[in-house]
Length: 549
Image (cartoon, rainbow, N blue to C red):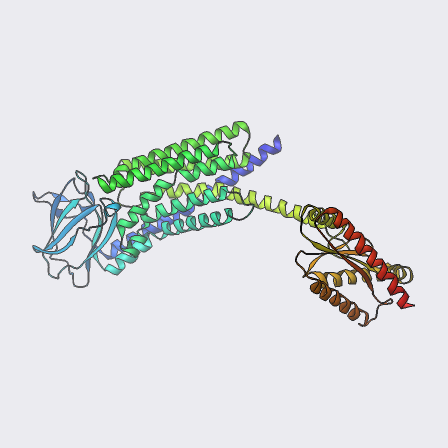
């Protein structure tokens, strides 16, 4: 009992060390992102503040009131010759006027399947030099809500774009690491004898990574299709509830796992179809219907928690794995809940809407993934050890070829099959003479040479076995012709001749007698073939002794 609690205590310490390292790295990345943004702000001229509405009220672009609004700003003191008006918008259309002249309009049209909003878009607008007044007519795409217009500034457009890449680099790296880990888990899970839990955990990681990537704005810049990225973002979020449930039912060995898997497959499919139809045929947007996805995510989290608790009661789950899953689920649930609350309350809707979830998924993956990798590694080592022991049991210690036990197994297999084959009995001549007159070392060399020669000669047509001190059997595979067997025997004789003529010459020349017999379908014929081959071998042995006199 004490050793059990010591193992759990060590595992918990290891878990907290992992969490501490991830927290440190995440805070470091966040700090670097903040520093990059501050450096760029220092180089550019901010246009977030100093705007006025029609009534003369001061307006900040990053804190716009609800509904449509027109704002103006005096910019006569700004030199636009080498600079551009750069900004980011989200679910907002607008027009830009320079001294009353329309110079830019952003009101994208896209497929209804993508919803009512384009997500986040990066703007770089050329402003005529010597412009005195800028006017913006801003309209939110969602009625009675505030338009989202942020990071407005005057500066070098290339630096603005590079800054976006730098600012999102930390989150992008974390997402790519999650994506790579997920893909490796999926690939590993499809290997033979690997746990399928790897596949589900990998699928979960890949979906979360794809969902989180939109916050980095990398794909928006690369594809210039923000509406497509937003669409993918919502679809991947819809698909996430299934993988955790499938993973938990797999590792807890739940007998009703198919019921849970079918239920969540049906729920996700229904959610997908209903959402797509409503978005395409009505005025609803994915954002309006995302609460359905939130419900399925909550159901998934509750199901996973209940399954883990039941598995603990039934003791059908490894305590160390239970500990990892518990810590991972708690961290992920807390982080996901924070992001959901931020979304519902419209807190920090401009960017990084999944920052806490990304953090939680890293902890979850590290906790559960590292345990599964260690567990799989341990199982693989045990399997490898068992295979080595099996190989040793079926391998002749002196010659390294198959032994008598291996032949007995092969013999049983042949008796169950209806395939035709051939049996060759082989025996070393004068082995006792070598042992008695020149010692067992010379005798062993004789046996080893014979074994290697036999195996080398017949490996392309069959399998060789050492069944006694100086006795060997070769089982010829089905479909091998007499001609192929004759060629193998000829090769054996050449190898023997080569050995006998190589310095230093063996004290007694190596010679091998053999007998061959073909067998038919039944086990009786196999036994008969063995006896026939043995009889032919002894007849050849007698003949060779007479010739040697």
